[in-house]
Length: 107
Image 1 (cartoon, rainbow, N blue to C red):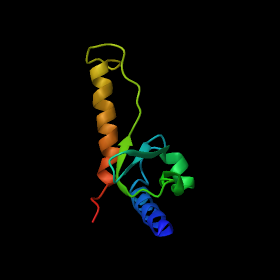
Image 2: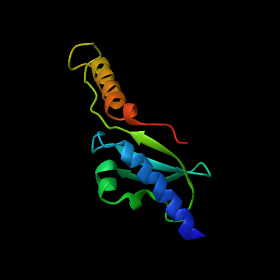
Image 3: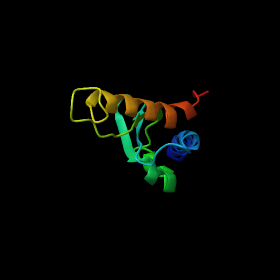
Image 4: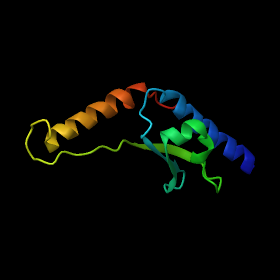
């Protein structure tokens, strides 16, 4: 039974990776398990080489994924090019365009 659970989890990881072909390599993906706890976490660049890194070692069911895109934040409070507000706008736009737009809901 453990082999079947592992296979199912790997299938879910591969399903997600197929949708992230245009996503940046520094995207961090965390597998969330059925018990609500955190599972393995890895950068997309590593998962493109070895998707099995995101499969929980204990055979826990993968129920969801958490996607995180790291970004530098501005050093000033204003809306100028180097400001914090502008940096937040930029990273949100990047996340939507490069990550979220390519995703489809699970069936």
